Length: 370
Ligand code: SF4
Image 1 (cartoon, protein in one colour):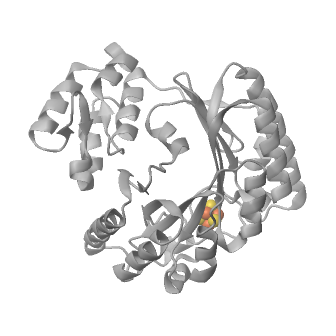
Image 2 (cartoon, helix red, strand yellow):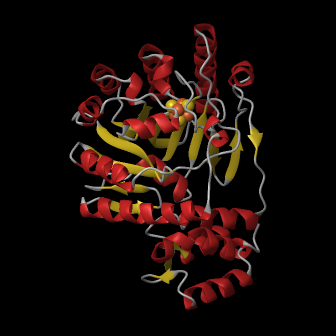
């Protein structure tokens, strides 16, 4: 199976108040140039290790990749395509922020091989953007971007923002569904400690219940608009699932390049240093993430059950063999008997029938493995 290549760009033009990802907004041009040079060394070194391997997805994520500037992104892309074996018919996604992206940027991305953009819309509502501490872009400008027909379009939105009417999220979905966005990711607002939003946020049990209700309305509305709910947070129409992200959920290989990137190849996991300056000094340095065989089984269950299609127990047995303890099968039977999971055709199990208890179900099935 071909793998995926992920390149991380930990830079943003400004920091959103809810963001807990590692990204910096104060890098100067010499930082960016050093990072660019380090990425080229990383690509060369990694390509020498995986010269026999082929890849069919490339993903530039962040952060905001375009904060590097189109010219550097093009050189990085060229270096990847000349160094690795990339299969024809590949998917090449670049994450974009609508406040710093134009149609001309999309054309230039297309010209150097990009096939898909993932646009962080988050909301078309001015008051939600303000609440999130995010630069507001008028809906007409966002719609213009999302109607671009030369690239496949994915749009991210945030739902479940406290004290704000769910009609606003549903109206964003209605508008997005009229554009070329064949893929929509919906993330429930998660208020992380240490972010500016956390310090001004009040939570309550009522809010939890409200989040579930809002998410159910979102699922229903997207289904009405012909988007298939294929992963907990992801919806696609016309079969336009994220081929790159599917690799994370279906135990396929992916190679991470850049600071804070993660890799999973031939059953081994590792990551690069988070700090972009440390990374730039030694881009080939990796930190191995050693796990027991049992915790690898747990990981497989955790990621696979996020998919509507669920996981195949026969596949699990083929991959992990004896590492799956008998107690797992006992719990599996009990989870099926109590309706927490559904046994689909053959040996496939899915927890989508009980999506709001997914975390509890995963915990129950993996408790003895971690
Ligand atoms: S643009 Fe994205 S990565 Fe950057 S600060 Fe905002 S949410 Fe975080």
